[in-house]
Length: 164
Image (cartoon, rainbow, N blue to C red; front, top):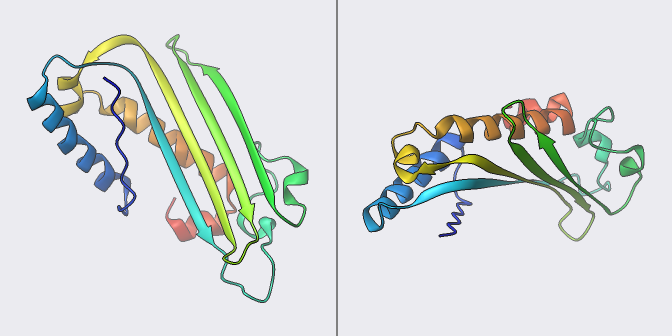
């Protein structure tokens, strides 16, 4: 199986995760032979620019010293920056990151950060391990990495406003 779960109507990570676990319990009732050998989390953070008199200023939102953003990202105008990385963890497994940052100075100026983390596992895990939360450290570590990425990309003031 390939299971994809989307929830765009939640406020906190714990809400999303709880809803996801409930759905996995339904799958477990349907087919108790499901094993997991990879998972991916996709985060989308979107900011609307409300300063109608001025164009989007990337330096107000993003940290100039970010290790992920090149200096030309901060030039005025429409910007679309993306990159993909493959990292090897101490455990021997790999993690794939896809990060995309868009600044769209359109009718409704918007800043969009899209981050996908794909984690191929070295072992197979039974769906029970997701439902009984013994798999949750994998999810929590990826979620922590996403928060760290946002703390690197965004100005400290923006991080404080969004609670990270």
